Image 1 (tube, rainbow, N blue to C red):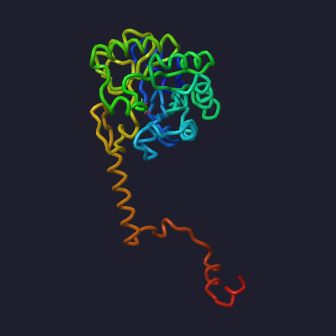
Image 2: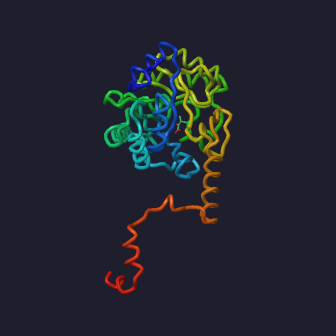
Length: 287
Ligand code: KIV
């Protein structure tokens, strides 16, 4: 098992794959939740562009900007000591050109303290991955369902069920590995295909909705702790925080309405003689 005190690095992820130890990964978007993930011993924290749906109230990840991603990545950086930090490159921060990809990715490392970046796509982004890797910017690839392209794929559907598409994904996995990606996210693909991809590449695969045979698993923080309204087949809820938080807020509201909070226990006092002087009208005028 990985040492829970030791900082997680990319070579350590390879060691984990080699000894068959699954890699744990979760998204985080702010400092306190990143700290909790770190303290829980999570290996990799991803500041996903899913911040758009889960935190910023957007309908999809498409509107998320590079500035928003850098802002959240900086906050997460401040909460981490051990986990590897990956910043997600948002839509149109790497598609325009290789130069644009280097500039955007460089900002994640230089301005936000990320250890690596993630970008979506297969062979068509291999030139970006190769250029970033050559510049010393580690890249996590992402194939299968690509949330930045949902309007093209017609929604959040399982990818790679048909043979031609499955072959394409196997090819993309190889292309990204050859380009220098240090690991691959496999999102929403049949478990048999995820197993084949995992066996056909040397780099770790990290699945979300891709079955149990990947080298690691990633979930969205809000789905794990029960803060999202959606209940996805691909996820598992380990707590019902939305219910706990709502009950806490209702109890607080009721205490305020019933004048049960604050009590003097929650209040601050001043010396009695000052209070007495303040209560005498002539002395109050002096103030
Ligand atoms: O943005 C995100 O949260 C992701 C994960 C689902 C892999 O890309």
